[in-house]
Length: 91
Image 1 (cartoon, helix red, strand yellow):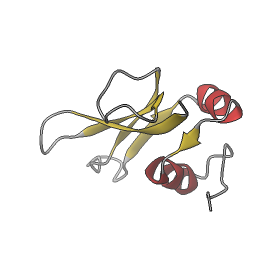
Image 2: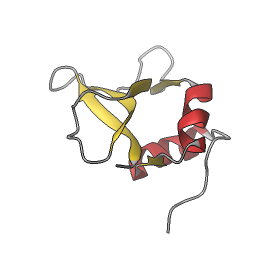
Image 3: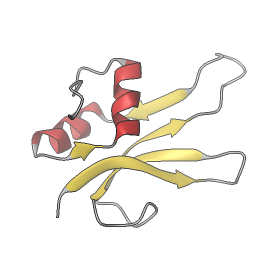
Image 4: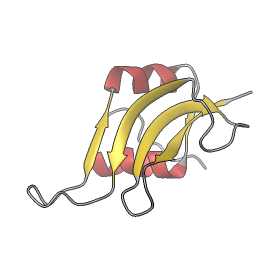
């Protein structure tokens, strides 16, 4: 079963936090992941006026190196942050 890098939802309704996870492709969205790779908070911080994205670059590189496929949303996050990890869109 292929591994996907995708988002998992946590938190209350209007205060969602998304975990970037490595998980088997057939599992449901909030199933137990193989590994949690980072956190994305879509809410704008009033102090910095920015959204927060934190992830482990080494672990993302590892999972991409062994063939894990990022979801469109995770790929979009990587492009938005300009991470030098994996910037090729799947066709």
